[in-house]
Length: 480
Image 1 (cartoon, rainbow, N blue to C red):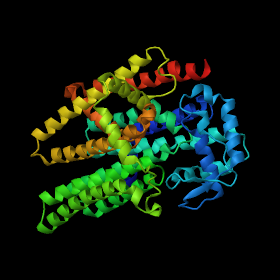
Image 2 (cartoon, rainbow, N blue to C red):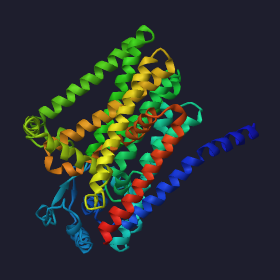
Image 3 (cartoon, rainbow, N blue to C red):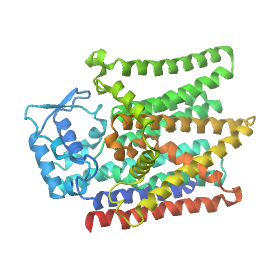
Image 4 (cartoon, one colour):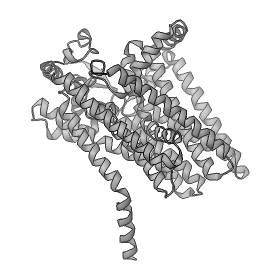
């Protein structure tokens, strides 16, 4: 018995070696990114630091506002100015950062869950110089990327769940594609509340897919636990940042697909439950629309956490009207900048072949999307096979989740078009779906006997992009 147990553990560790190597590489990259980027130059980093410090003073779990700490606020911005934040950033407008009133309060950012994750390191380093404290917080924050990479591997393995070496290689490649993503690591190795949303949203997708997978396998006893994981992680995402609402959409999409499956299969009582789930999801969508539409008329105690402007619908309708009046060249440029802000940020437009690199990355996205379409068509033609049905349904859940996340991003862009350069990172809640689908789509473009070569080429391109980001983008931009 003990020999069998030890043999099983040894076999699992042996199979996990490539993943463990990747996780070690991700952690080392996080430390290097935290070190090479000058303090406070990541998006809104001084503001995030002040928010964390203020929340530590008044650590109630659901505060409607937090106290202003003028001394901390002034100290961190003075330190950021020392590192030339105004020279490196085009995004801050000096007039936006007004002197804060000593007795003032600031509206909270969701539940502040990310900042509570930083509390232990913040408490241990309070006596350190601000630069050293920022580095320690960055390293602790970058560790969350390990959770994201593991979740992406789990997502891919849930779809590609056979013992074939090919499926393991595809799952590892999906995790590596996310782990080597330049912009994801740049944001992860900074003080930014996006960093907790990304792993929690990836875990939400993993929970949803595992629940659906177990239902296909008839493992009802474990299905509920995966739904619980997905729900808890979705709530955690919402408590971290407003972009975390995407994770709630992921759960709703999973419930919708579960309802469709039960409504078309199984006993009569299960069909009734299935149709009920479908109706509930559609009702929640309608309810969310009503909440947004009548937001100005509802009590602020009900809607304050959504933080929508009173003229949201008017602004959105005007923006949609302007869509049809924009020349296609403008939208092409915005697509280029969205691609830029998804893959990188600082210095890309000044780097050698920077615009060419962004164009190639955009074409890569279109190419893997084409490959995914090809794969879906193949699976549809093989629909009678139950394993093919399972893979197709799980992939459609990921596709729908990406589409939902992108629709949220597009709505924000239409309402606040001045921030379109920054919006690519708001797609990171769907990073797990993107990694898995990119690898599946990429592999569909290669003959099966050339899969290994195709994956090697993909990882080689990811490594080359990371080296390019280091040597030709970040280092020249910050230290030239």
